[in-house]
Length: 98
Image (cartoon, rainbow, N blue to C red; front, side):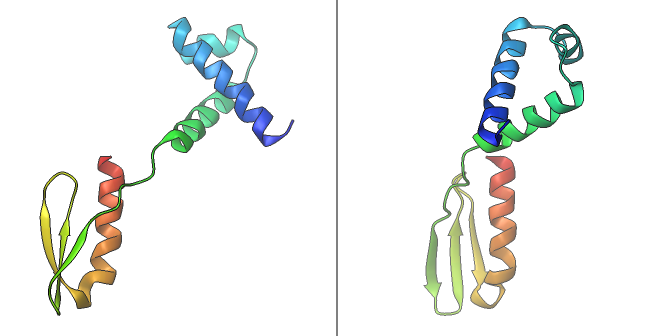
């Protein structure tokens, strides 16, 4: 089975499970599918459907400072020398919050 076919197979089972209101383990037993594979594909599909992180506006306030405005309204002023270190953390936190 190709990857796209596997994804479709598991996506259909995940949707059917959600509508069934059964515990995952019971659903898997009733449909003779692997509980471990079900959990793996549920996590994988959920991750694939998660929207990409939003871009964070960056404004130069001084030649040595950068203002980062987060979508939640928080503003951070960062020295340009620390931007390479700080920006990945900001993006990671934004991804976790979003």
